[in-house]
Length: 64
Image (cartoon, rainbow, N blue to C red; front, side, top):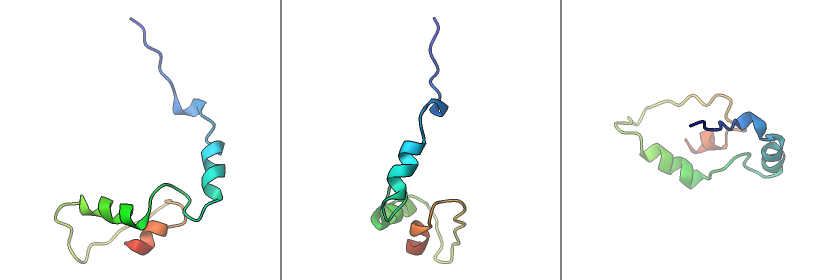
């Protein structure tokens, strides 16, 4: 049995880039979603630090 492998490289990423470049937040999410994602990290201390590298304009960094 042979299965076809579909590659993400076959998708035109420019469609996504163009869409998100025209809105305030250049990717999916919101401050509420950022805080929800943060809540899943166990044993996070009050003085924890975050490295936000190559993550768009850094909107989530302001929340963190």
